[in-house]
Image (cartoon, rainbow, N blue to C red; front, side, top):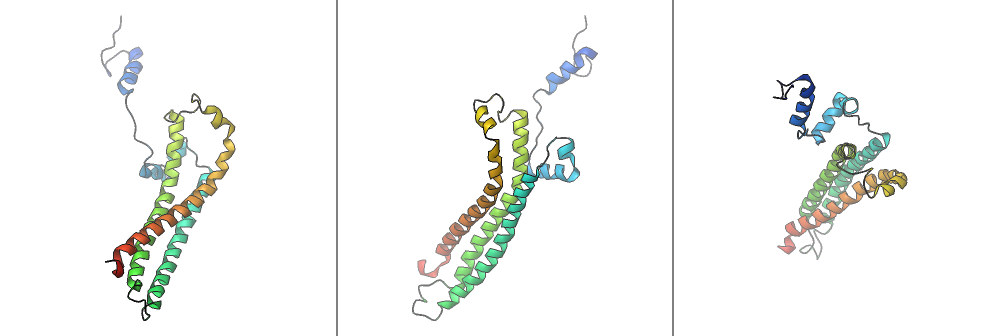
Length: 195
């Protein structure tokens, strides 16, 4: 009778079983941002991983990049407005209460920078997030066929069409929210009247 002695020294029949047992707990790190973009660049995302980026996903990501370009331009316009706003009150009776153009520019600059960074991160992370979700569904990390909610998933495939609008408007509203919050907080910190 042949025995299973080691990973490399076992019998031919037992080698596959030993190799499986030795590597059963082995996990490969996948789906980081760098990993996904490397796989896209060398063409192995489809060939090795079997993940195809649908045109819908690419259209959603393109919409997010358009929002990014919009916020860069919007921040430049806001910075010009902030400078003019501060100068408008420079020689008036309320000049001691109104923020100066420097204070307004600093506040809008900080808020604009953080909103641009937010939009940039949303655009960069969209495709890796999609690939990660696909691989999690495929490997069972996110349950699908045997999940209690499978019937709900099965009858609602048309909700995929709402993702383009969601990606576009979520980028706009989240960046606008961040812009307002950080601008107001920064203005409260630098405004000479509140010090």
